[in-house]
Image (tube, rainbow, N blue to C red; front, side, top):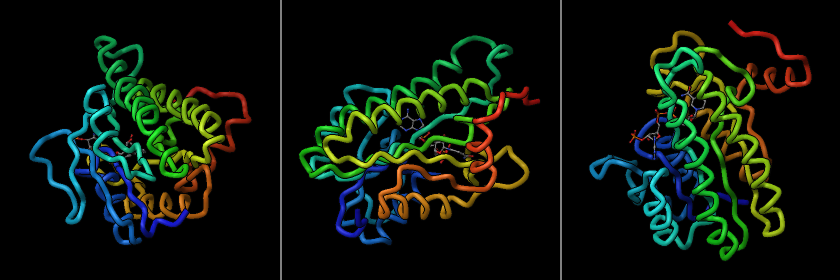
Length: 230
Ligand SMILES: NC(=O)c1ccc[n+]([C@@H]2O[C@H](COP(=O)([O-])OP(=O)(O)OC[C@H]3O[C@@H](n4cnc5c(N)ncnc54)[C@H](OP(=O)(O)O)[C@@H]3O)[C@@H](O)[C@H]2O)c1
């Protein structure tokens, strides 16, 4: 699927990886890029068409699907990390928030846009997941659970949409140099690198992006018995 000439919607497009993705799509010749943003005054890349979109709000999700009838690529990038462990977190609120945004929000967008993509010839969905779908850091256990759920959902959606010709891409990455990982010292992927890999995968019709060596190792290690991570 060529990026040149397509119409894309990227959620969480006002900063971080989402904003970079919108820029890379435009650079590769996308005809129109819609950028989902929560705040009415959010700034997006020049050339991006802003769409008010909180992925946890069913009315806004439905309105976005109606506002982007020409979409051929949906990038579910919006996500949240509360940095809480499962047992020591003060309540279930943080775990619920991560599931609401990272899992249910992504699923709601897939459901809303599947018919749009079908009408437009199949197209593609990209779900931005994480190395944390597979590698559980106990300090952010509820985030990992939400990304593992989103991975399982992505695989099921891929099967459900196979018949209509929709490519469904899962993106797994270690830390990316954005606000979300601002507190992290050490190696981080440049958002440009991840965004270019996403665009490459869509163009090559590949179903998975493993953005760095650590993520590739984490996937390989899934065949091994789990060991406690500390
Ligand atoms: N950074 C990393 O280390 C890393 C690693 C692997 C995967 N990821 C994943 O990459 C994706 C992008 O993250 P990032 O690093 O760019 O994080 P970020 O800089 O914190 O940006 C998150 C984006 O998601 C939006 N968002 C959050 N909740 C939303 C909601 N309910 N509805 C719509 N938009 C919402 C935010 O909007 P506001 O500006 O309104 O808050 C913001 O635009 C996420 O799915 C994340 O889990 C990140």
